[in-house]
Structures are given as structure tokens and as C-alpha cells.
Image (cartoon, rainbow, N blue to C red; front, side, top):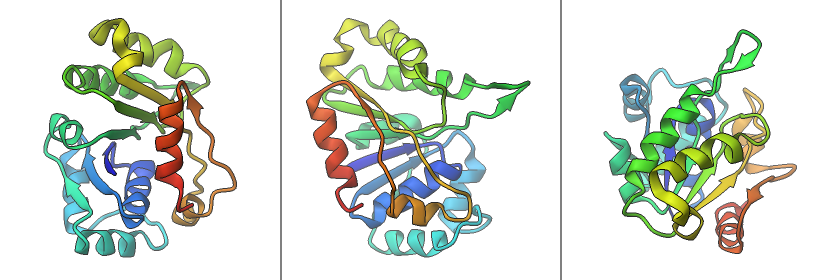
Length: 192
């Protein structure tokens, strides 16, 4: 499957590395060019057991691609995992990155059909329903459920053990709105 990973921080890089090693084509994109350069060179990556080996293995198999624009990542993929940061800000979660990436993606999705957005970022309950879907509907109209499928798929990764946790999940949780998304989700995670 062709999967874009939007956000190359902790969750994004682990998700992309693991999915690439299970046979998927991964298209990494991040607004931070430094993170993309780190992915290209394999230097200054986050510390995570086996991460570097996973990335080297996937690169040798040509399963990892670094995209210079969000448009490129979306055009080349059928599914996107949104893995942008949600830092704490005065006892609240900063959702500005989620809002911004959703607005940017909605522009790129105008000519896409049968596309699935997986929100993997750590966000409060109902963020997808109350914030993300209205942003997408503003750009795409009410046809969103017919042409774009949205899934909330939270991560349960422990720092230092994230690769192990991703590949040996205790549970996979997903908020799914239709049958097609469920089939795709099962296909993506079938190895785990």
C-alpha cells in the first residue's frame, strides 16, 4: 500500500519505519526540513531501539521516499497517517499543528477519491469530529464521507520501546466511520 506519513517526529518516524518494513511504500513529509534531512542521512534521529536498522532495511528495499511537499506526499499515496505534534501549552494540548495540517491536506484532497486519513497524533476525544471534520468539510463540502474516509487511530508507544510496541500491539484502536476504512485498517495492520 502507498502510505504518506505527515509529521516526522517520534510517532511519525516509528510508524513509517515499521510500515515500510511490512512491505508498504512510505512517503515521509514534514514542514521541518531538518527532520527530512535527518531521515535522508540517518543522522540525529530520535533514540529508539532498532529504528536505524529498520530505516536502513526499508531504504535498501526502496520502500521509503522523502517528499519535498505535502502535495507530493498526498498525490503519491492512497492513505495518510497524520502524526504531527500536540505539545502541552499551559495545561492544554496545542492543537494548532493538527488544525494547520488538516487545512493544508484539505486543499490537496480536492482531486483525490477513495483516500483515507488516519489521525495518529495524540489528541483529546472528539477532536476529529469537532475540529478536523469541520475543517475538511469547509474545503471539500458534504461529499467528504463519499470521497475521503477518516479514521482516528491513536498510538500506544513507549519511548525507548516504540518499535517493539508498534510491532507487538496489545490492542489496535480505531474510530472508523465506514466498512471500507475497516478493511484498509486490517490490511495495514495484518502483520501485527
